[in-house]
Image 1 (tube, each protein chain N blue to C red):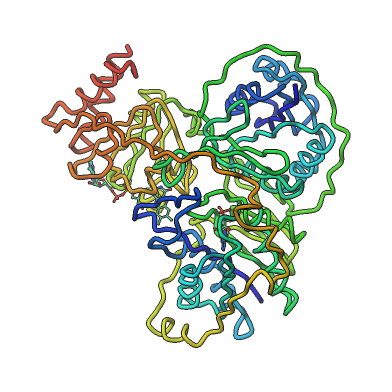
Image 2 (cartoon, rainbow over the protein chains, first blue to last red; image 1 turned 90 degrees about the horizontal axis):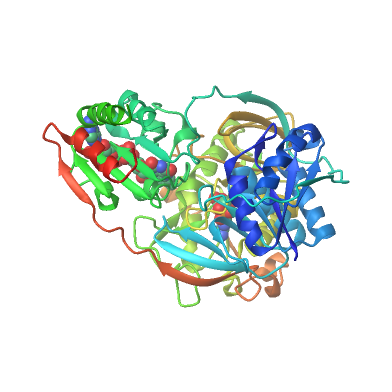
Length: 315
Length: 263
Ligand SMILES: Cc1cc2nc3c(=O)[nH]c(=O)nc-3n(C[C@H](O)[C@H](O)[C@H](O)COP(=O)(O)OP(=O)(O)OC[C@H]3O[C@@H](n4cnc5c(N)ncnc54)[C@H](O)[C@@H]3O)c2cc1C
Ligand SMILES: Nc1ncnc2c1ncn2[C@@H]1O[C@H](COP(=O)(O)O)[C@@H](O)[C@H]1O
């Protein structure tokens, strides 16, 4: 069976959940081979968890150039691996880095690239949602090696123990490209990551800048906090939390929109959530068209009461 | 300072967006300059203003007849010159082919007089791949500094801030470079009455594949590197239960969550 390469998304060797989802999809179409870009030591720690989710081989690319130069070295690496291993496909996470690495490697190898897939079949047919999720489109790569980036939370990661043999890659990227001069870490919020969270509570312009009740409900439910663009533009919440076309796409089990009107660009980022709940004082707000459950009311009354009630039920 | 800006013509997201029988985006509907391409245009104009009279901002659109509207709007907003690549053979092109055409445009302009920057949007509002900018850079052999929330140019280098989830990166690249910018970078201006009048006298070139030295075999649906198999309209979500808060809205919300086993 041919190999399917999976680019590992990790922080210092701690593998992020979307990688396990990619490995789960990769198994359908071939033998999963994880491509780990980072320190060899971190790779050997990661190898065990990668093997648990089906990685037969863990290829390790350890070179400071991958940290010091933006996107290009990883694209060169994947183009090299496509040439040397002839995989059936390459799967990557749908982050900006993932999409750009895929696009560049695809251009290098004359391949087709499909971004933001939500599913990949055994025959490498990819499913996407387009036009603010109004349509579901399936497509296939017709040239070169398929490069497919997959959105987080698209499939359930399923363990399938494999060997996970660690192998160093003998390849040195050119080192040309845009350089990373410095990195500024952001303080951790202590909440789950937006795109990975099972519950997301989003505040909009209706918060008037007070995200306290939104955060309190998110914490009671163990969820992440999202924000509409209106709230981000007003400077009330960081852009990294924006949900929508120019922010994050989320697909949690539960999405609660508080004081959000439901503009098409916002919908684009949350429409595929399993259950949608809306709280808005305007009963004609378009968000109610999507809601499985809606409360017409003031978020400053409804959210605190809901938070208390959730806490009581959990206690 | 000579800057090329990619300005795509896209279907209006506020209207119904559909597909044609050959499974490509229906571009015969109401369209406009992609909102996300107003940001690189604004950034380019701000640079040009700081560099005085010699600065030149060129807006480039690849698309069908009606796509010229995106170039015209860019001229009204303030670009000095427009380029519309119009060729029936391009219809149904994949990203790989689109990047081929755009790279050829950049090469042609760069041969006329050197460009310093190519500025692009973060993503098109219809394709949303974010693949075109880096593929163009790859073809040109230029560095790409992407997802910029701020851009500075000095000493033959471009420096950007790139905000991620857990960190912000500060990126530097030699000019000429391709830079994609986010919608956090600036407040795009609107065309002024004077701008609208002035736009009528600005040069607007219409180029074909032959002008660019690109072969028809490299573009269009027949040459596409990705092929659409099926398109289905998502069924509308079934209407849910809406309650009015009469002092118990929060409690009822929590009860709903509990009933759905979400608590
Ligand atoms: C190119 C482009 C990209 C965009 N990308 C995004 C994106 O990624 N994400 C995004 O969110 N938007 C995006 N937008 C903006 C989008 O069009 C809307 O402007 C935005 O989503 C509105 O945010 P909002 O719902 O918070 O504000 P509004 O539309 O102003 O709605 C606020 C809502 O709060 C309600 N409200 C007010 N006070 C209360 C209260 N006390 N209690 C309960 N309800 C209350 C009001 O009834 C109203 O419905 C984009 C726009 C463009 C042009
Ligand atoms: N047909 C086109 N004409 C002009 N610019 C384009 C075209 N397609 C893509 N672009 C540019 O590339 C960016 C990213 O587009 P995409 O890769 O489609 O998400 C857009 O914001 C535009 O700046």
